[in-house]
Length: 508
Image 1: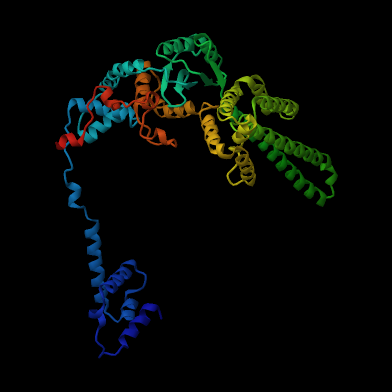
Image 2: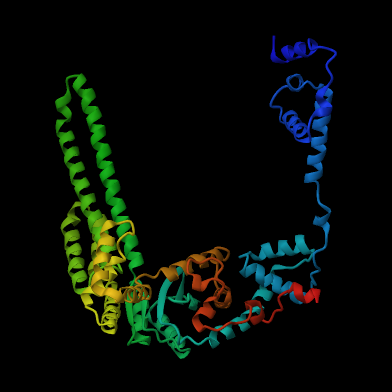
């Protein structure tokens, strides 16, 4: 006998003289019954028996609940209420086309589809092209009129769209892009011509940061002979990490090979032929041991490079040079064990020492100035700099900080703030332009060929568009141009001659 039949017999056996409690149920109880019926948590017959009501009553409550749900989720009349009217003019459509291409990163065909489906406006690809390029002259005029004398540190790089090199340069502090040009070559003459043109706009940085591109560095030597070009630690860290990953995988492979040979050895022993694999197993174990030692040594050297030698919180320049040379010699010693992984990194380190450590000399000068300003020992200032390299959860950090507080007394917090500011204003990588390049990729993938007019318009847009998301609070809501000049400018659409829509103007 199933549960429903049992519940039905129980109801039939109930005394006929009992009054129905349905009228005595509170609204919350009725709602709960309706939810149980709609949710089918229990058979309706059992629910009726438990609450001593009829099945018809339960279905009535469920019907009321369904009506309430339909009403709640029905289309609201407020959804059809007109919020405001948008005056669609030819000028507005032109502005919409430019905004779709730059803000939404839309293709030309995507713009055509949007206008057709949303505004019932037909437009050809040629018209879209003409509208976009019609905004270029104003963008170029704004770009060329920008004063670049506030650029403190320039960051240069080269990226490629297919086989076309694109030369890029940005201000490290503001992120303002002062160079974005597609060229047929990336030699010294090409870089030198662009940097000379930028020098006429006031570009005269304290120093620049770039990778080891020969044309880039030679062009800067021609155009800016007195400006140093520091090495970029970003690309080196990437190479070092690839080296570490490679030797780690090699060690894992040797371990897998040894385990495989051991399994074969076990099966061979069962057949009395274990001696046939003895030599192979010995070689596999030796290879595994060597690869594990190599992986461990390479990891230690990589950690020294990242955490001590090329870190902002490391020792003074002379000590770093000694550690740097030691790492190079150790890689040279280990190189025969895995030459295809270690040799490229060792050569890069050997050839780039002075460039990669150039930021240390700048930082040491700033720390020396802090020492003179507050009349404290240079050793204490360097110790305070190294303190930032410890985790806040490390007991050693707090022990050293307590010692420095006792020695610096009331000057501790002032010196600490000055050291922190000095470190934050001493870049050692080209991460700013790498981030900028990643933003460019979102635009480049839509086009097979990049023309100078399009790049000028794109540079203008990225320089005058406010940052939407940033970890640096001083940049929030400001554009790179505002950060560079410290002055507010009009909306980028207004700078291009358009009149952005304002609801307040329509209401007025």
